[in-house]
Structure formats: structure tokens, C-alpha cells
Image (cartoon, rainbow, N blue to C red; front, side, top):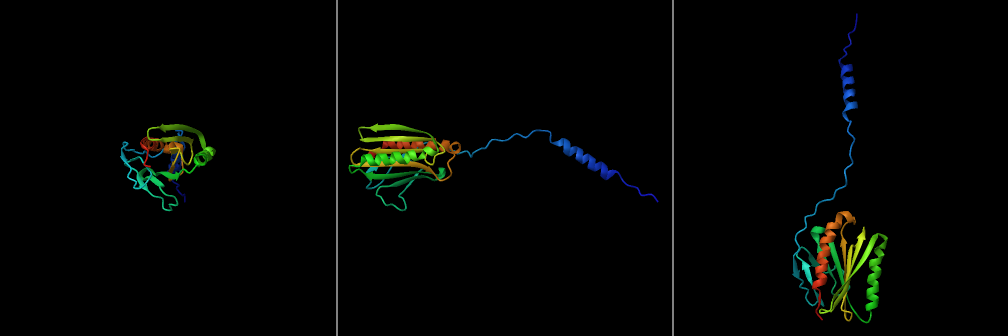
Length: 196
């Protein structure tokens, strides 16, 4: 007695092997990393309404202000951008013949970022009519704080601010937000007034 063996499974296996070997001829192309698109609203400002504070300025309509939870100092304020995961932390100090120390402390804080900063640009600001003098620091690179500033009247008041993000800084992904908030910071500086 003879056993008949069907060639169908063998032919099917050879055919599938042939298809598998010839199916992937295209070389794969690596895709670049992408970041989420952030739709930024147009800039709109309102005057700050800080009662009994020695200063005032214009603030973005999309920002909210909070006093720090553990406020050891008077007149400190946080300007938060919840939709952008960003905050501008602002501090105030009265000047008591210590203007040099306050400005040097600020400079040291800014230049601690040289580890990650590619460049630090100092942009001076002066509004003699309002007695507001300051410096805007632009830090490029993957720094924790890409924009910082300091304002003073050289006599009684010293105000400092720094922009921080609530996530790991990546200069490519946060660049549009930095540019957006920096315009708000410039508006803050230009509208800044001392009340005393």
C-alpha cells in the first residue's frame, strides 16, 4: 500500500517564504521628533491691582497672580500661566544702602545658569520719568530659567523676576512659549511704576 503525500502544504510554505523575503524592499526613513503645537492667544493686558504694594505693572490676561504659599517676604508675587506650564516668580526687597549686594546677588543667580546656557545677553532698561532702571537677562540653551530681570529706582526699591517652567526645559519645545512670555515680561517692565 502506498501513502499519498500532498504537496499543498509544502507549496504554501515556499510561497509564504517567498512573499516574506520580497515584501520589505523599502528602506525605512527615521522620523524627526515632533513637539505638540501650542496655540498662543493674542497679547492682551490689564493693569495689576495689588493693594498696598509698592509697585504696579500691566499683566497678561491669560496669567493669574498668587502670593507664594510660604511668603517670608512682603510683596512677593507669582505670575502663573497655567495653560503654558510657566511661572514668573517675582520678589521685592527694600533698598537699605545695599543696592550693590542686591544687584550682585541677582547677577550670581543668573550666572549660575552658565552650566547649561549657551549665551547670556544683558539688555539694559531705563525709564527716568518713572525712575525705573533695570536689566533683562536672556539666557539661551537648555537653562532652567530662560528669562530673568531686575528693576530698581536706585534708592528704595528692588524688584526681581525669573521665568521658570513646570517641566524639563528643552529649548526647541519651549521656544515659542519663551518668546510669548518674554513679550509679556517686556510689557511688565515698560509699564512698571513705583507707588512710593
